[in-house]
Image 1: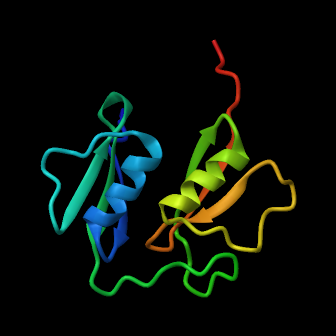
Image 2: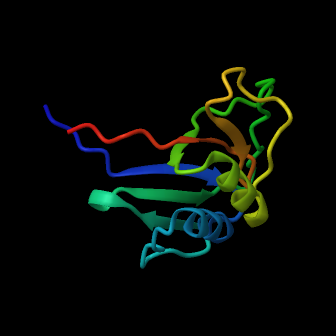
Length: 125
C-alpha cells in the first residue's frame, strides 16, 4: 500500500486569521476554497496546510503540556534570530522556556500552536 500525505490540519478559533499568519510567514498561497470554517495554504506537491474552525479550541500549553500540543510544525530558515523577529512581528509569541540545545526556537502561533524554526540544512542529493 502506498499513501501520500495531502494535508496537515490545525484546529483553531479563526481559520482565515491563522491562515493569514502562516501565509505571511511562509509565502504560501491561500487555497481557493478557503472560508470562515476552513482555510488552507497550498505547499509543494499540492500539500495543504489547513486550519479548521473549532468552537471549543483550547490552545496548547507548551511546555507544561496541561493541554497537549498533539502536533507541531517545523520550519527551516536561513537566520533563526531574524525569523523569530519577523514571526513575532506577525503575531507569534516566543515563550520563555526553550530547548536546551539552542539549535531551534519554539514559538507559538496566534492560536497557541507550538512550532519550531531551525537553521536550514544543506539539501541532500
